[in-house]
Image 1 (cartoon, rainbow, N blue to C red):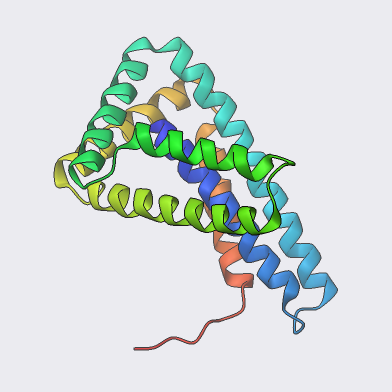
Image 2: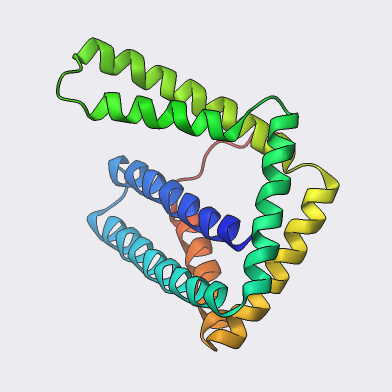
Length: 185
């Protein structure tokens, strides 16, 4: 689960990076607003990196927690497979596509087609994963693992609670700084 929490942190960072790019592209934002947004994003990344390091030390120091994390990952993989997606096979396909995208021998047309296939594969995986995460048993296991992990991380490093709080505050500030999208009710 903490791997999931770490993954979620990195996904949040990526999402914020893309959102930040959107903010930077918004001509109504002043340079000062853009600088403030970039500063907030940097703070968020730094906190996430510190939490990742604490998490890694915590997992090394707590074999039972590592076992619980592995069991959760296995549970999620099974549920994802039940929802029609084989994670291992999908990862192999995505790795092969990534290799093709990085190859100097791949033409621009091939890269474009491969990128579309890669995105389609990723969408299948996300759809199956999201469906799996709706399972009440998985949600319960995930919540328990998250609580156990955060408790262990707080024991490992007393800064954990402060870092989590800082990240939430920074995330709120970033969301508040984003241009308001039209709300349809």
